[in-house]
Image (tube, rainbow, N blue to C red; front, side, top):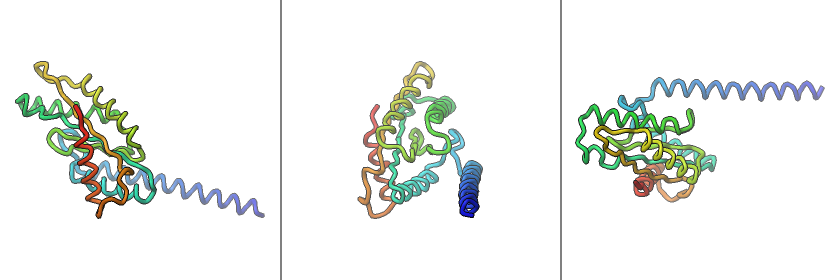
Length: 189
């Protein structure tokens, strides 16, 4: 008789796991179809990313897992080189395509934050892993992104890890702002 109870419990646990997986897949599909994206790079918008970062900070507080952010910037590329808009757009699309390949699909989230600035949130990634990804992204961009007239695309990257700053700020939005500030300040060409 206890076998029957054990088997029913196992079946119930499996079915709940399957339901949870289906729910997560449905949420990801809805997100892909309904999240506003930057029309040029097809990445999340800044406002959407800030909202998602707040969620990541709250999740990190609850589960104790670290998450890191990676800041990527084309330091004053447009201002220094005075390129036509279509050439600059092509470079920005190429840069976004480079790091789309280096991030984990369905886990990491990327956004265009400004004209030439990008941000990647990497849940569950400690600072060391984020630094490795930053170096990988930087190398890939310098190898693959070719600017017209042999101009060099200089990329600055900076990383910050949330777990390094627990309980330091009054509100979640202040934590998000501080993470972005730290990553921006650490950005090196």
